Structures are given as C-alpha cells and as structure tokens.
View 1 (cartoon, rainbow, N blue to C red):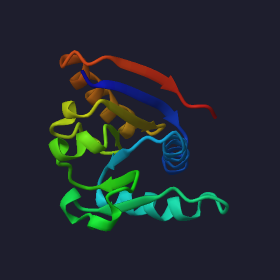
View 2 (view 1 turned 45 degrees about the horizontal axis):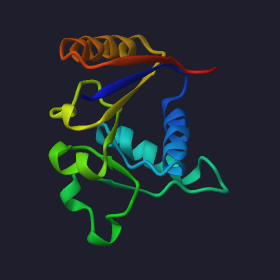
View 3 (view 1 turned 90 degrees about the horizontal axis):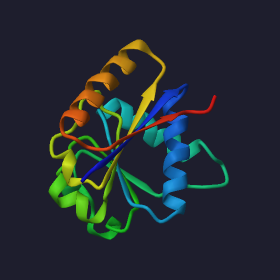
View 4 (view 1 turned 60 degrees about the vertical axis):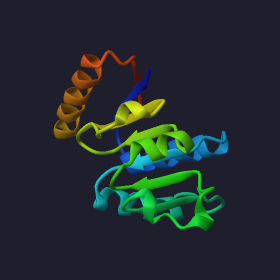
Length: 146
C-alpha cells in the first residue's frame, strides 16, 4: 500500500524540496520528482546552487526512457512524465509537485506532497488528499517549520 505524506505551509517550495532531496539522498534513498517542465527546470537550477559546498546528484528529463545508461545510478530523477511501473522498482519514492495526482501513483511505496501557502496550491492539495483518501491510502500530515 502506498503511504502518502503531505508537507503543508511550505513558504518556499524550491528550497524545501532541495533540503528534502538532500536529506533523502544522504540516507541512500532513490526518488522521482514529478511536476511540470517549468517547475522542474526551476528546481534543477536550484539544486545546482542552493548549497555551495554540496551537490545533490540528479538528472532532469521528460521521461525515464531518455535517461542515459551511464546515469542509471543517479539517486534523484526530475521527470515530467512518469512510467510508474518501470520507476517504482528502482525509485520507490515519488515527490509530487504537480497539481494533480499522477496516474499509477499506487506503484510507488511512498508519495510526498509538498504544499505551499498559496490558496490555489492549498485547494489543489485538498483535491489530492480526497483522492488518496478515496483510495484508502494512509496519509500523514506534516507542518513545515517557518
């Protein structure tokens, strides 16, 4: 069963995601971040500069099939399109930055939803929460620290 964690009241989603991905990568986790092209491009840029003394190994692309063979060990993938069946074996955690629930989300072991403070973001998160609840997926709620 897929476990879902909502991280609410995030003041700056990019910074929060960078810290989240750094922590996950340090612990040996392998993750997929899903969102639209603009959001992922912005996160990609931020991952290169958010900490001058560290680097979070990542790769950005449209889909998994475009990942070069030499980069298969990359712990963080930023993907616009998901092939959950192919991803979930090697990348069991999904960070969803999209406004909707991705198809085949149940193939992942864990889903993390990062929710900003804006009213549109919060309303979209409520819709996703309802969807996960209807699927009887266990949901955790976390409040981001200021």
